[in-house]
Length: 198
Length: 255
Image 1 (cartoon, rainbow over the protein chains, first blue to last red):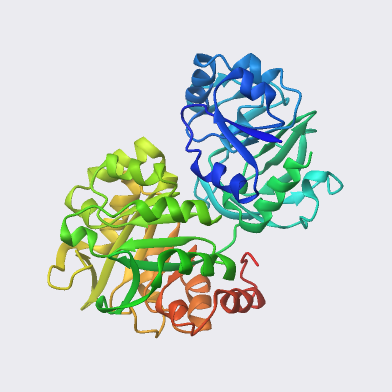
Image 2: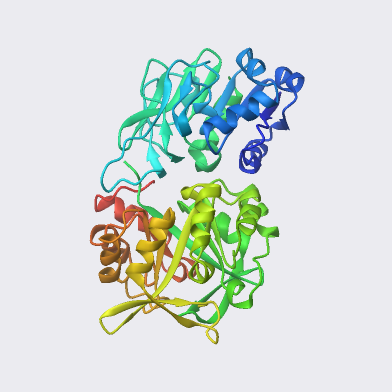
């Protein structure tokens, strides 16, 4: 089993790689299409803004590579948002479109600063899904984001802040976590472990 | 619901974790990585590492330990101390820190806050304020890592906090110097005044010594996180005890 972490050129990959290494996974950070296709699992991390990340993927010739993957793929934070059809961040851009829906800015509410940052609770809709094995409903995970996907048919778990948004999304082999499993202590570790077993 | 955060602060000096009383007389309390792992295991929500000598010595925080911490722990952490430029901050974030905190250098050139927020996003930029109550006012102090160099920054605490927020600070750590290391409670009056001044997250610092001090800061001053050092280093309280107490009082914490 080899896990490919997609090197989009904008993300800080240190923490994600370290989290997988702690699980004794074979990890390779790469932007090479052949290596990404050959990996048993693929992780698409990301920080920063969606249009910049999409331009990077475009420049590296990875858009069609990622869309055509058939092994389990996990997008983390911005990486998850890139899996949807569109993001309205920074003027808006088309994304990978492997999970239906658009990513929108979290609404503002008095006394609730954006970005949504800190430990918040998962409301698990698909309790039977293997990704949530050993994860109780209401578990806390670590979020840092200003944009999110609304709740839809692709939602496996949601989270409530200024609005209820998709915390975990899935369509076919594509999964996304709005939170950072690599910074979510034991719960995050278990989710990564579960993903590696898919 | 967003959890209230309990944050142990590790003051780092010459590669060791130290803790003084009222910013003086630093005693060594242990190895950085060992303490970081212990606090992670006890349920810390986040860690803050302050290189307390860095700013007053005019040198940059040593980075070697940052990537070791980033590889070993799986909770967010913030690094503070002598971060003077966007490049300093970039190097620390590239080593795996989740946030950087600036204090004295932001007072020297407040535009640094704007630059860092633009470059890395407000979520990465924490502004630390060392504040002292004097007569009826609260004033900012600078270079507090070294008592011989500590000076009054000629700024009012609330005005500076407001300015930091408008420049792009994502969070403020208010260290109330009168209380620091005294273990007789957070400065509730000062924290409440800050809560009424800014809407970004506030982390209370200085004075935690008993379970009820944590509850007071969350209930009365509505802060988002509570930072403490000596009470955890000296194992007067464990993070688990604090969280279980807060939970019983109906305060949302990650257990």
